[in-house]
Length: 460
Image (cartoon, rainbow, N blue to C red):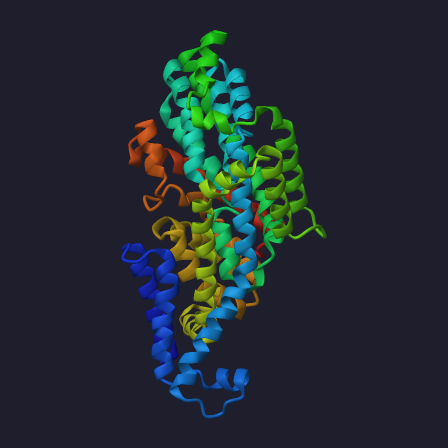
């Protein structure tokens, strides 16, 4: 009965999320709760009740009441990650408001001038820098606003802007405050509070993939330079391309504090990467407070920055806490173990020693055809439990599941790509084909680095 309920729960969750019958947050709570209550009526939690409350003959009410404890224990495990993400999102949102990324964009446009090669390199660099905030919509808006006029003026193929923007965002989206990594940390109990460790595991592949994409931008830029030649843009042309006209946006800018903000951000990221340093929650908490005090000393301005940026932060945090509730009910009811045992019984034993690579390869189609919520909340726990049977750690399973993110942002399930396609006026299928061609290189780099550095064992 437990095995049946476990499979039914996972399948129901995936179907409801993919068909958009429920939001990910509501599905994370209500689906496992409904199936756990069915299990309570079947009297499935007698052992857990005896261990926790020392009640040997539990009533139906005890069977239902224990579900609250399971949920609370799961939420506790993800609370630290939720708080870290809350302040990480606030920190980068405040830096975006203050205009920390503006000088980088302007310098890149001035550097590019009328040379298509330099324009494409600048596009890649700006997309990578702005993607530090972990939000694809923001990256799309900033890059498109800055570069589309320049692409049109020089007649550069808009396809290249679409490709470079999405693939740079794909790489930087693996930062712990980005969507997929945050989900992995929240759904695998051993990774809670280990965001610095998972960042260190992912960073080498991310750095090499970024260098690779800069190389791609150079290659594409040379093709465009050969096709178009170099156009001489006047200072007036460049100034017009980089000016901001929105009065409300201009009022938030703090150009005089650029070096303070960039120094603070570099130090923060460096501390996150180091071992035996401060917890990430502490770093982002202090960073957010300093960002507010330095850029917006007025209490009125601080309140406005928190209020305006709260929406994005809360959406992420409630998902993390919802994942905790899902995991608590899935694990403590015994559903996870039962499902894992049934899965391992049908997988050929010879696959077991290569389970890290199996998960890495599955993550590519998995995160393309499924939403991140469906894959990481519904599928990853099963893959991880199965990996444990073959001796793989949750860290190895978590990293392996993230490698397929090289293709995720090409999926029609990703909402903000429609903004990118609308801004650039690109055909989705043509854009997917061109982007996938270069995304293969990112995927190969991710896997090669993970294997060579033994982050994911090739076999066990």
